[in-house]
Length: 429
Image (cartoon, rainbow, N blue to C red):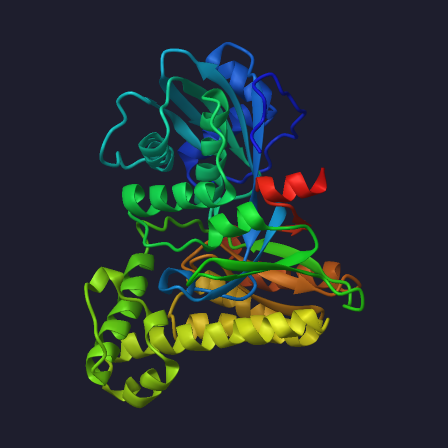
């Protein structure tokens, strides 16, 4: 699963767009470098290994994982690349092509609380890994994302890839389940994002040309092959030009509102309930929600209605996928997007406009926000024969409404790929 220290691969240069003037200036300096040149320019030595973590797309299962619902997803062939080498002293030094400031700490003395910068995900991963395994060596690592930040699980991809690098230099082997759990707890406990395990699961367990289906209650998962009779499709990522940060967004509040609904429903129904932070909607049968929904405050009712509806859409979508019914699958993805807007109440004006344009454009089977949905990007399932025309029409109308985003708006076609899990690689050998 993890690369050997002497492994080196050719890496294409980064295509990421940048959002503030300071970052734009920095990006111009590193844009012409490939990952290994970027590493050498910063550290003054050559890297000894390389690691890649894919981004993920989730067609159905929006905002369900944190309350132990049902999800689907793909790992895609765009992601985050890492060049690294061992640091004998135990020092960790990380530099990112997305952010000008480098970060530095030690595996022997990692800050116990977050520092408020991009490297908090890495510090959290260091602490979580050290709870389970001794760490003798640090790592120098350069990180380069292939797409803009927002909606593609870049934080999970960065955390998983960093764990891969740190495990490699310390000769640690993790199971797929351990890797998912470590990345999840680092983001949740250290960084403070009330996330579930959707992102990490897709990036570890994903399989090329398969839909990943996971029940977050017990972690049961299935990779479902694309039926031979299914119509061909292409996936596209439409980046709005506006980035987002989960910790600074309303993401955590939405999760708390869903949990509040679950807690109240248990009380109304006379169900046993314990601590609030251990309460999830999965504990509450949908019949209880239907019986007491009108007693919930409107925001709590909306969050619960979305959660139950989305879990049902996942069930229907999985069945449509098994049957090769791409039109039905895509229609459910559109329904998911509308529910995210009306019931989960996410979406910046830019993302909502992109969603509306997708629903109005010929050649788009389905689409919705990707990720938390406050800013970032949308995903689209496209008819290959109409994809270019559809993307151009969406671009034209979107930039008519938001001309100031012309240098930031971006679209990218992508394919499914394998996640980084070891079990799949052993099966392929």
